Length: 239
Ligand SMILES: NC(=O)c1ccc[n+]([C@@H]2O[C@H](COP(=O)([O-])OP(=O)(O)OC[C@H]3O[C@@H](n4cnc5c(N)ncnc54)[C@H](OP(=O)(O)O)[C@@H]3O)[C@@H](O)[C@H]2O)c1
Image (cartoon, rainbow, N blue to C red; front, side, top):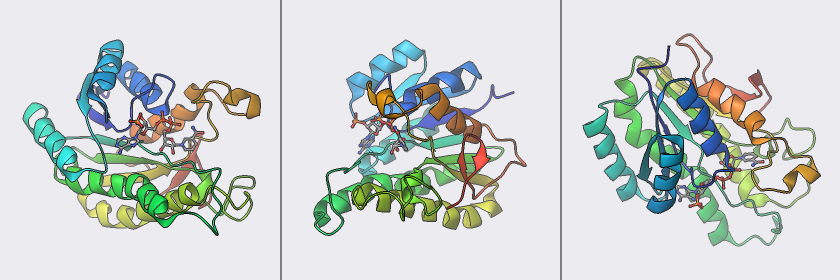
């Protein structure tokens, strides 16, 4: 069913990360998977482990993205699925009143503009697919709806991460409207609180396989599947 689909995932540098698990699952579903990360040696090693293609990519560098676009055009000629998984700056020690603005800009540069750069750059290739699919990996921390981690409920720290994911959610909505005319769907997916770092289970984090499931689902939606939504565990959640 997915044999002819090409899927690209950003931010795959750790075996315990959501990107790695997502790549593994998509490969099992028979998609052609390309994993990417900033460090070429690391991503090559992971690519060999998964038996998928691997490439260097820094989503904060337009030059790095342009190189990848050129190589995907040459090798595959199109892109069906783009998963914007790269993300960081979980600034639990920061206070919103004193957060360093340069730090905050860096968080936005990765978590928000990284995804937008990728979408703008891969748009022509996604247009060549039967229908393109984009997944933005975001977080309930950047939402109003999450009863524990949401903007109005979680304590005042994590400002850079929360605001950057809020902005990524907004970007998803804005792009969904624009991309409809090109048959490209785009959704935001929160994986929940996931044990991507060993030991987090003790604080209530769920297994990586559970967090990745919603990402895989959104990456393999049918042509008439939803767009412009915010999901966790395959279910709609509030912005
Ligand atoms: N784990 C959770 O509980 C949770 C909850 C909600 C949302 N999320 C989101 O899920 C996604 C994956 O996170 P994870 O928990 O699986 O952690 P992770 O394994 O650390 O994944 C984050 C990835 O982003 C990469 N990255 C950082 N800067 C980059 C750049 N400039 N260009 C390209 N890649 C870059 C990191 O690579 P380097 O090794 O090079 O830094 C890493 O591979 C993130 O967007 C995160 O915000 C996670």
